[in-house]
Image (cartoon, rainbow, N blue to C red; front, side, top):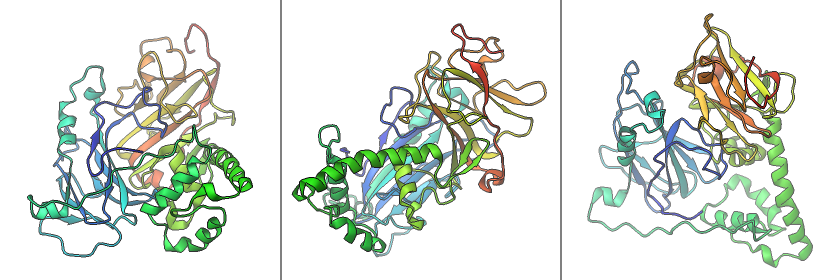
Length: 420
């Protein structure tokens, strides 16, 4: 992945079906992202203060998720972790030691790898989610995110040591050994954990390790690695669908408590699932993403059918920030639809039932009845899955005793639309 190091890139609108890079992006927050290098000196992350009264309409959840290059979180900045007052936060790497100037805040821990990744999210208000809405307020927040090398923070006239640009990865579309070459190259910049020395000794026998050359391996070994790259991804994809290490409730899958930091328990399959399904994953205390691939009867979800998700009164997700439901194809992309609706949640203006219940209709066609259309999440024609995101989840979900309702199959989709 190429790009500029130590500088934020801002997405200025919500992600939609035009984003075809996978990763199951949300359709709730504007992203700001940066690849950073802290192998030589710390970086100072500066973020602005945000409105702090949850009772006011301008209250905005935000976070900056700090992830090392093994896929493990090492710190958060934001609503839960550091509050809404803003500030200047020092991000440092595994080998730095020294004293920080006054006014800088330390994060919960250093990055275990010299390279790291920052993913910032700012929640859009309900009015900002409408077509053509003014997003100047959230853009102004994004524009105040700043990364400054410590040397330049101390002396604005200082010239920081140069940092290499991100290297262009090998392309698996043209090189069947690209994945292994990328792994070997990445481990040069981000050395494996010393705890994994025995694994690395084993992998070295087939040419996998920091700086090793796959091309010098025997032809039979290279053919085996080519097959492993293909079959390995199939294993990972199947593990995502089956919910490896997840707890299943009514078809929904609770992630394990160590999601976001899988290396802490040496769970390599979960780490691969995390990278495949979403690049990075939040700590569950920050956000719980519950996936669902099947209906009430255990059948795969398909746009050939219509579904109903009904929350009884008082049974909606308990959260301290927001919750939403989004649909994805099996390549982890948002789904094209005629009404440009990619998620529904507690900020969507859905119509509740007279008894206080809330029903979401999941189908290709809009349901008949004006009062039902706000509650419709459009489906694609083929197979799909969904994420229910709970940001700052309450205790019932954190303890995994909240039971989301199962998806009721209402029968085949109708060419002309119309739910009963």
